[in-house]
Length: 289
Image (tube, rainbow, N blue to C red; front, side, top):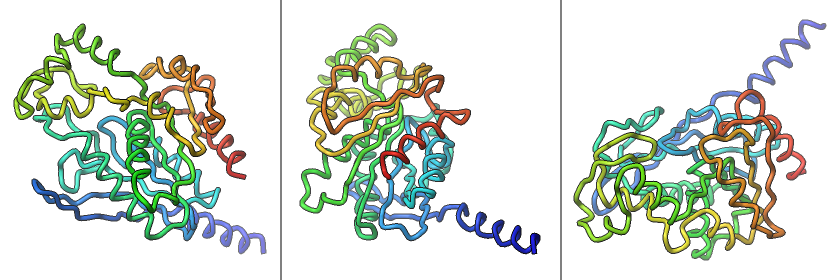
């Protein structure tokens, strides 16, 4: 009897944590036709989390799949897009540094919007989740969704170690590190190329339009400015040992809004490795229940 019980429980466990589905969307624009890829953890919930990876990342990253696997126990499905960066059916690996970078961040936002539309047709409730630069992008996505009439499906936002530099900080950083001034780039042809540090890559060939789309955060496109306009429950999880975006904790100290809650996970790095993600999910479990 004990053996039968063990086998029964084993198969239930295997069923609950089976691999996600691979799903695809074909999208067209004036300049290109792309196939977008995503993982879909689909267990029949009426709530789904759209979980966006960070800089040059992908849908197979440990952080985004760790969040998705933990959401299963909270009866939340997950959708994890691969941003294409202009590459149709981009594989599950980091975007290489040694390419001519012509992709633009506006298209990243449009791609996540397509996945939101996909989810909006299938779920009653949607949670927007972003890690690192994906957190900043998720706020941009929400900003765009709020301009639409059918925006009521978004119930909350969760940001994991979001990037938070503002326009002036980014401009000064590039002047000092690469001799590139964003203000000067604005006077150049958008189709021209420069050699500069870009998205964590050293001295790469980058289209001016591409560079400005990621780094010209004037006009309220920075994280703190966008958070000030958020009116739905927003949960931000910071890592005390974060060396990628260490400035975020200090920048968020001035945010005092009832709908925004900030938690710091002591001992964690930027990717919430070594079981620190479990600490975050314990907090989320309490918030949802």
